[in-house]
Image (cartoon, rainbow, N blue to C red):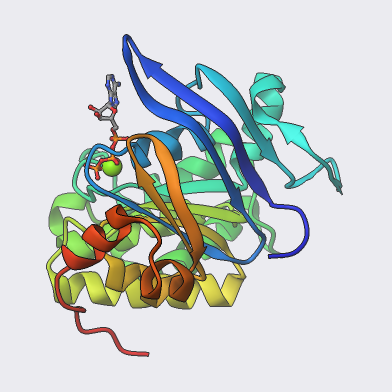
Length: 271
Ligand SMILES: Nc1ncnc2c1ncn2[C@@H]1O[C@H](COP(=O)(O)OP(=O)(O)OP(=O)(O)O)[C@@H](O)[C@H]1O
Ligand SMILES: [Mg+2]
């Protein structure tokens, strides 16, 4: 890859008590790419996602971001910026979590859920009408973008299937037009065929918006389908990184070979 990474972890360490969950981890995410982060359960993948978004604080190390900031892309260490600056940057960084059931507030309609990021960030969708009409137009656009009907807006999470709920989570993540999308096992709670549809939606959105994505997964076939590069994680470290063919066709690490061997057959995915 050329150029400077859009988001970068440098020598990250995260300790929980005596256990080192992320151990001197460095990772680069380049503009427009999808990087797959794979590794066995407990290797620290979700912790890395949370550290990158600063949902949790690292014990040490740097998280460097080169998102446009005040109009100019320059290097910002996310650990040393003020809360209000972080809030501004957070709009550009979105995450979709694994569990589509836990991620949505059951008391909120889809309209309320999707409107929330605009309220939190004080952002008004652009348009020619009144602010409230512009917001409604953007919410309709969002649900349609993820393949749902606009009638979904006045419904509650329990009225939707798992796949539909994950579409709503994706719509919420996209609400403020982020540049970086972190997907933490976005389909592992779904049936294979439903998951495949959500993956195809993600691939479509990624291409349409030129999103930069970190795709966390157990599934090597999904990583192969979606990702430009792969980083393999074990015990809090990256043990191998490269393109799919570098890492998976010629794995240097025995651990990567084990992950590949443990992977079930490719689910049905259409190009
Ligand atoms: N808040 C916490 N307090 C203590 N230990 C934690 C905490 N969060 C995570 N851990 C530990 O950190 C390790 C890595 O967890 P993490 O959730 O990042 O793994 P993962 O690679 O995402 O696993 P999975 O594939 O199962 O989602 C685990 O051993 C976990 O028990
Ligand atoms: Mg996880």
